[in-house]
Length: 68
View (cartoon, helix red, strand yellow):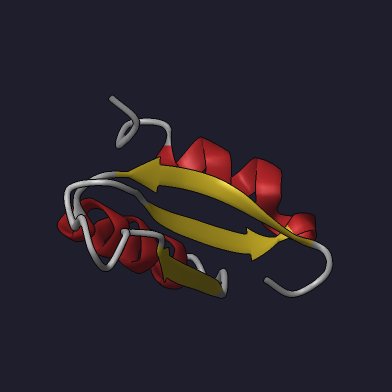
């Protein structure tokens, strides 16, 4: 991942990661979803949502209700 970017959300479900990305985009926060699933064992691994560190606090606050 690019320097100065941080992971603000992690989930096993791709749809939750996409929901998080959409929430952030609606607030004009650029984000990236990384698929960290193992290609040999798709049930192992997470989807991660990353934002620039300048938006970490705001992004975390926006996504707090998605975190189960």
